[in-house]
Image (cartoon, rainbow, N blue to C red; front, side, top):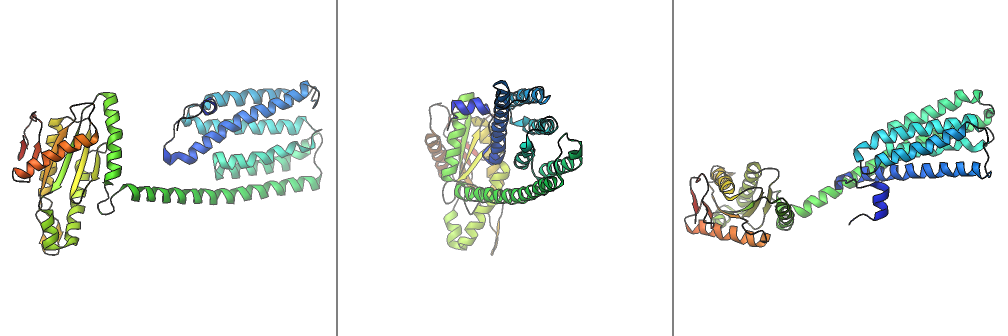
Length: 375
């Protein structure tokens, strides 16, 4: 879903992976805090100019002006740049502490100015983590305890004790809450990833199931068309697999499928897509790969399967596969059309005696793989 114009204005066009949802939350929260901090401080300046909240002659006026400008500058630097999050968050925290100390020192008529230290702690825990939160809480407590006597209007011993105890309580509360919240979030994300993996992967072999595989292929086809790069599809079908189940049992058939899936995974690139699209049928999508390259890889895979010899109860079992290869020649072709071509090439390999690679394309590979047939 595209971002609204307001969101683009506030956050820029920073993009986050679905696994970075908490980082995305922190990034957006910091942007909101920066803008809000500038606006609310500007309201205090407006109160001075309108005489509603006069601070005439106070050096704190200059501090508020500088803080407002700094918050807006940091927001401008943050927009669209998630990699800048950490140093901008720390820069803003330092600016906040200086602003609160300025209010404490130069606005003695405001007895509640110390509340800014309390509002600061939750934000630090959320944006910068538990260690930073504990450090800022400790710094605030120590600063108030030893700096109170230097104020022109120091807090009473009872008032100071209440402030310190309340700050420590708030720090401990958010430390525990932050720890449990992050733990809960991590468990929820792990559970979501597990469910997503279960929904998109074949439970026996661990490769993508048909639905997820074809969805990934359609996405890569769009990318290939955008960049004008070729792509090919391999259709791998195990030879005489039904006889394996009939003679040795389904457990042996499962062992064969797992062994073949493992061999296929190790034979392809991380940019390729592998899916189990039928009982003993696998499909491999090869982006940025022309027909000669696909034929060469298919022959490597065929040899690898032939040499697998998975061990079952009765001993090592010799298996083989017939592989059909299709290259996309028409940029308007869908994945289903390309897959049908690879499927037809695989059946041609079966008719030619099995345990071979075949392509219906008239184009020959640059290096004809041993055992391959290009019809």
